[in-house]
Image (tube, rainbow, N blue to C red; front, side):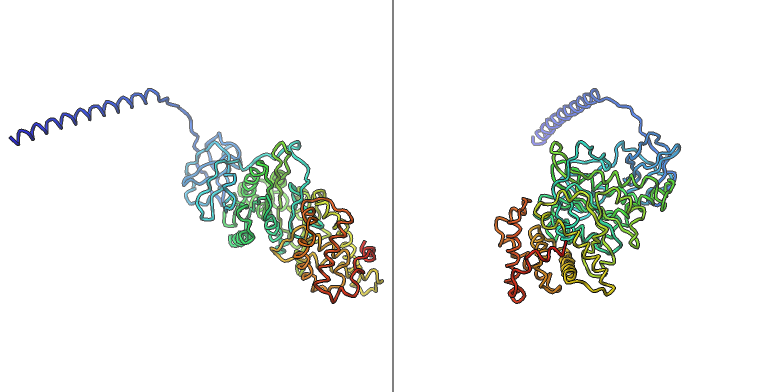
Length: 542
């Protein structure tokens, strides 16, 4: 009896399973048939080339006749390259990745697109390479948009005048060579004269403002870039910065595209209406990378073995920095390119090219550097052709004649080296000039705000520092920087906003500065507290 029931049960289970399986198979076949009916086969051609030869960071391929200039190509191992030379029987390619799998005979595939990089706010606070790949170990960059590396510069009708100042926090630059937002100001000098320090100080001084910064390191050591990142973090501005690194260990192609990629990242933020500061550190290594690629791909050399279009390589990069009209968002991209000179030769090929492209230059002299006057800005060889119009009116009223008087002091100081005797008036001019030069000195990573700079310059030009020994000038500056904001009250806000000041306002600032100095050193100012603020000394300083 039990055996019969088990057999009946097994038979019912088997028939049910077979029915379910048959239904599932029929459904699968119906779905497959529907998919085949809806599928349309597209027949297309795919161009595949082959590597003919490989050099140091370059390759030459044959085949793929449809390759376009600057098209992105894919090599084995997902290595990328860009079409650089289009010859009749071959294509010269610059490689972006160092890989041993790129060898003669390997297949090369077209991608049909140009090189692009991720852009947007997701890059802020990150360290990336020239391809937009993260180098800081904080995971992938979650950017939703991408832009081509090479983009045309805004047209003339899309640009607006430079009207807003970019405060570097460095007294000698803000007073004598002011920079405006949207300007291109070259920083040049010999090795180890403080070029990077000036640029990093400028970035750190943007703390608390709406400006973002892009620091592009080209051909620098990784340890040097790490120190810059550490200083940006210590200054509290790293979260509003993008750091791009194309170190000297990377391929020449990587170093060549880095500034263009960094500019695209800055341009997207500019097009959103933001003010962006971009630092290229430095374009000397960029020019050498382009020369290396051109010589390896047998382009004809010119002066100093650079190819003939080296001027266009840099001009098309720096022309992308501008101030946009309000209809385009009103954003700005301010460029601080850095270039290295050799033996103080400003007439070399690359420096003269960049001087003619940019809107001014700040020259750092090794002679001034060795004398201990830092930042080592050479006042006679530096100029800003645009930023003066963007300088705050209150600041301009205080520092208008400072450059001329300082040049006269330098001329007078050179004259006294021969033992000449000076009249009392000229001697006062000489002593005040030495105090102005002492005021120009500034420690690294200690930028000053506009109000502090105005109080210091007004004090030194009015003669309030004449009674002080040179070694106490820096201490007097600290007293003014700490006390003036509280002493001036509402006037401090007007100065920060850029409102013009009249003579009464300037007298108030001078009086408050004098009061702070008298309370700090009553022994020096008690005898004649008002004599140093008269106009007698001013006549000898003009």
